[in-house]
Structure formats: structure tokens, C-alpha cells
Amino acid sequence: MILSLKKEKSQMNLDLAFKKYVSPDLLIMDELGYLSYDCKAADLIFEVINRRYETGSITDILPTSHSRTGTRYFRQHPASQR
Image (cartoon, rainbow, N blue to C red):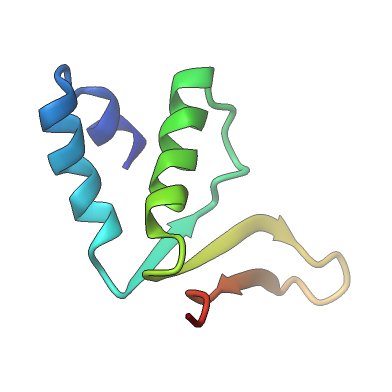
């Protein structure tokens, strides 16, 4: 997602690219905390989340495992009810 958004040069192309991540009913963002991101990447992630606010659900999967069970945790962020 980040690489796809970062390669867009014009604002018009960037807006079109955002639509791909804003339009689905559910966006799964896997292991966002696994890598370090520069400020531009962080801004793009924020913008996707901001544009989805109250319109679509987001699930993020954390890269850490529970030490005793080895299970992975995830959080769901459902779209707010209007």
C-alpha cells in the first residue's frame, strides 16, 4: 500500500490511488508496526485512515506474539455509526 501510494507523483493520481484503499468495506493492514517508516509513509498511512473514518472498517494485525500461547493479536476498528 505504502509503495503504491509513494510512487504517485501528482495529487490527481494520488487521489485515485487512495480510492483503492478507501472504497472497500474492510481494509486489513497487516504488520504495520513491523517496519520503520519515514515521515512521508506515516503521512500516507494517516491519510488512508483519515479518509476511511466513518466509512469503512479497518483491521490491523500486530506483529508481536503472546509470549505464553504464541497467538497473534489483532484489533478491529469498525466504522463509526452515524
